Amino acid sequence: MDTRVLRYFVAVAERLSFTAAARDLYVSQPALSRQIRQLEADLGVELFVRTGREVRLTAAGGELLPSARKALDDWRDAVRVVRSVAAAEANVLRVGFVVSGGGSVARRARAAFAEQRPDVTVEPKRCDWGAEPDALRQGLVDVAFVWLPADTDGLRAHVVATEARYVALARDHPLTARESVGIADLRDEPLMWTRKAPKEWVDWWAVNPRPDGGEPVWGPENDNVDEMLEHVATGAAVCFGPESMAAYYAHPDLAWRPVTDIEPLRIAIAWVSETVNPVVHAFVAATVRLSSAT
Image (cartoon, rainbow, N blue to C red; front, side, top):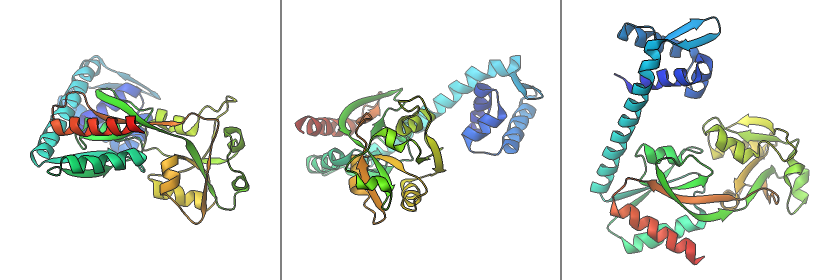
């Protein structure tokens, strides 16, 4: 059976809403409904009771749910192991990161590791917003620089750096006259956000709720850093990023200012708990040594 259909079933079963599941899966509701109807036809049973706006699991659906979750977990683990073994066999270490990743620590760690293990090819792998932990669990990368907070279930993580958070503003924004800003200064500013990342990740970066209990003014959505900064450069919104992003993404129409009264970003080196690949452990050790020396 296509694991995608099981993933669709689990999404609906956990939310008891086709609308919410379709939104989180990035598919249309009619397409999702068709897939669930086809699954019910293939099994010869009804999995959901649909009465008006209410959706409930049938007894059969309730019985299928834990088995479907286990099947998805087993398949994810099998895929991760196969990908990791193939990379190890090719003497390749895939290092995941998002945008500016682990900052200077990451770059120095890759350089030091290349000197230590010239026989290993280090391949940087850019992840979507907040997707580093899932990339590890899916075997798309062997080790990753993860922006915390994040769901590190099934992973091991060691914090190797902290960075102040900055706000990006259009060059002609009035706040650029200041050397730094506070979160209250940004109360009425539309804020860039993304559906790509988990909601908890988005809320932390958005400082939601704000110290006064309010919610940010949500601005345009984005799928990647380039889209985000283009919106900011036109004055459509502001965005937050770590200090390394402010240094790396210089732009003639942007200005970055530190936000002095919000907690900094913590960056961790993370890997799958069960990994036995000595190359992974060697890279982690090199990164931790460098972070301790700074």
